[in-house]
Structures are given as C-alpha cells and as structure tokens.
Image 1 (tube, rainbow, N blue to C red):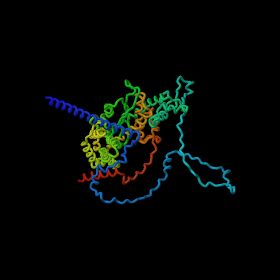
Image 2: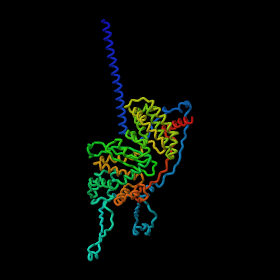
Image 3: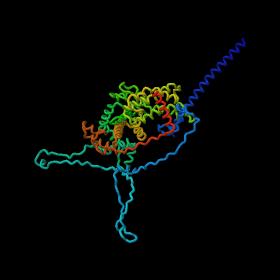
Length: 555
C-alpha cells in the first residue's frame, strides 16, 4: 500500500510537470509570435520613416529559386558565355531652353553704346555693330492687388424734367456684383481658391501675405466668400458634373478622412470623410467629384451611386461590396501587392531568395508587366490578351495562395487573407478591357486633397467642408481637362451671376466655347523611351514566367 501511494504521488507530480511544460511551451510560442509581430512592425516603421515610398519593385530582388524551371534543365558545367562591349552615339537634344520659354511673353532689352562712345581707340573712326550676345532670364511679377471702382452712370432727360411730371432714367450696363455689398471680385475669389486648393496655402497664411501688400482681408471674410460662391454659383456646375459622372459605365472610388470642428452633436476630434468618385481612363470627358460626409457608412456610396450601372474600381473596403447588383466592384491589385511587399521587407535579406513573399511579388509583378504591354491596345484587344496571358497567372497565384498556412495576425497571414478574401473582386478585371488592374487612378485624384489637408488641417463647419468639396471637384476636373484652374474659376465667377440654366452646358470644362485663356499651355509629348533589353533579375524572372505560361498554353 505504501509503494502504491508513492507511485500515485509520483504520477501526480509527473502530470503536474507535463501540464507545466505544456503551459510554458504554449507561452513561449505565444511570446515568439509576439516578438515576431513586433519585429515586423519595427521594420515597417523604419521603412516608412527612412525608406522610399515608391511602389516599384526593389532592384535587389532575386528570383532564381522561385521559378527555376529553365535553370533546372541547364548544364552548370558549361563555360560562361563571353561578353562584348557595345558603344553607341546618340544625338544631343537641342533647343531644350527654347522649348521651355516658348509659351512665355518675351521682353527684349538691348544694351547699346551711344555713337559718342563707339570711337575706335586706335584711329578714331566710328565702330560698327558686329554681333549680339543674348542671355535669358525669368522675370517673376508677384500678384498685384488694386482697388477697382465700378462707377455706373445714370442718365435723365432734361426736357422731361422741365415739362413733364415723369422723368425717365437710364443706367449704363455694368456686370452684376459677385456678392452684393462686398469687396469680392471673380479674380479675388478665384485667386484665394487656387491658392488654398491648388497650392495648399491655408487662409490664415494668405491673410498674412496680403498684409504685406497693405490689404486687410481677414480669413473669416475669405472663408465666407468661398462658401457663398460655392453655394450660389459653383454648385450648379458641380451638379451637372455629377450627372455626367453617373452616366458613365466605369468609375473609380476612394475615401479619406477630414476633420470638421463644428459638426452638430459631434466632438471636434471626430473623424469625418471625404469620398471621391471619378471617371476611368477611357471616358471622353474626365470628371472628378468629391463629396463630404460625416461617416464612412455604406449608405453614402449607395446614395451617391443611385442610378449608376456598371463597373466600380475600389480598394478592399467592405462598404463597396454591399452595393446594388447593378454595380460590379473591381478590386485593386496594387493593394494586394502592398501586402506582399510589406511582408517581403520584413524577411531577412539572407532568406528572401525563394521565400513566399518573393514568390507572391513575382506573380503580381508579372500581371503589371503584362499591363505595360497592353497600354496601346484597344479595350477589345486588351480583354482578349488578359484572358490569354494574365488570367492563367492570377489563377496559379490564387491556387498557390490557397495552399499556404499562415497565422491570421501576422503579415504573412494578412497577405494571404487579403488575396483570398478579395479574389472575387480582383478577378473582375477580366470582364471588360476598359477596366484597370488597380485603383491608382482614384488615389492620384484624392492625393491633392490629402496634400492640401496637411496645410489647412481641418474645416471649421460642415458648410465649409461642402464648399471645399465643390471647389476641389471643379478644380480637379478642370485639371483633368487641361484647363488653367485660376482662369477657369475666374471665368465661371464672371459668367455665372448672370447665367441662365440653358447657359450652363457651355461652361463645362470640355466646352469648346470656353475662352482660350482658360486652356492650360499644351506640352509637347516627349518621345517614348526605348525599352532596354535587359532589366536585371526581375525582368529575367518575368521572362521565365512568361515563357512558362506560354508553353502551358501551347500544350
């Protein structure tokens, strides 16, 4: 009995030790995952702080062990091929400065000696002009503020004044004031708007800058001008642009945060949102629309896109996935690539070659490499090429990703989860040749707002946020249609106070009746650079992948 008791006590201790080991092993595993997570976050933070923000694939990628079918069949004992040096000459580009100065008004100043100072020091005869040396300079004239008085004359009949009880009075015609009883003029409001929404100069800085020119114009007055003009004049153009946008069948959408200080029943620190919708690259008339909303709820894109039928490029935000069935959401492969790129950055350099992160990048980069080749094709030709070349690549990518086992909260798990969760939307790019592989077009259009927000920081009231949305929309649409933002805004504010509803069509950014001053100087298109035959390891990997899929298609 005593021996049995000792064995039971020993078994109990063994079980306790096993339980402790199991618990400690679990704790160690959890700590290792936590340490790995923090290491990944540290590497990412260092990259964001010190690294490049470009999404181009890094030059140091090596893909020899990722897709090495050709290398596996080569004979490594064969000698390396001999190399020869090839040199060539290219013509030096001439006239670059002349091209840069071509569109500017020129003012020539001649420096000549009077005849009395042109006597020859040797014989005393008058010296003749033998040539001119010309140097070019850029003269910049800052904006000038003047006080303009509109004196409207009135005329009365002197005879009627003497002989009749009624004296007719006639006034000279004059443009209607932009804002009754205000100093605001079309050029002043257009200048303030372009300074803030194009150049990113907030109103308080403009106020200080105007003081140096002896102009006392408060930021509150400037804000009131912008809100009034957007509500009473520019809103009509904004509404028409929105109507044209919703008639398209391919759109892009994105959203970003904005802070509005005085929203009803909301704290000043609460985030609001600026939604962006824009046309695709195949539209005849580009349109960019901003819309301010208090929240990021899905009800906002549903309400804005009411009546729209077609394709909508978006990122992976869930709100876009619950839109009506008439809207087909197209995912963004650039967002998918960012997950694999972040994962790649956290892999030690010695382990990158042949890693899962590297392989994921290769697949997606090949899709973008194909897109470069499709640039000059028609939508129908692009659709056909995508089905032949691109779709097999994405199919193999998703088949490979579905076999991977990754922890959900790790960067690897996030990359795998995003790809699989967004597969339905990412593959919709193969439905139409007009669609794009990424939503970068929308991100480029929302960038001016994000850049400007760093300067003006917030909107004071919802009315100010809505006014900013209207003005941003008109300015960015004008830029997309190659118009000069200041001149176009000035022309609108000169014309809209007296315009009728039927006149608005002629004021849209693509109208042929716009004055020539509204059009931005057209730049000469540079000749496309010839592609080099050798682009390094990435190019070679893409060639091998392309050859692999072409061989599979043939077989």
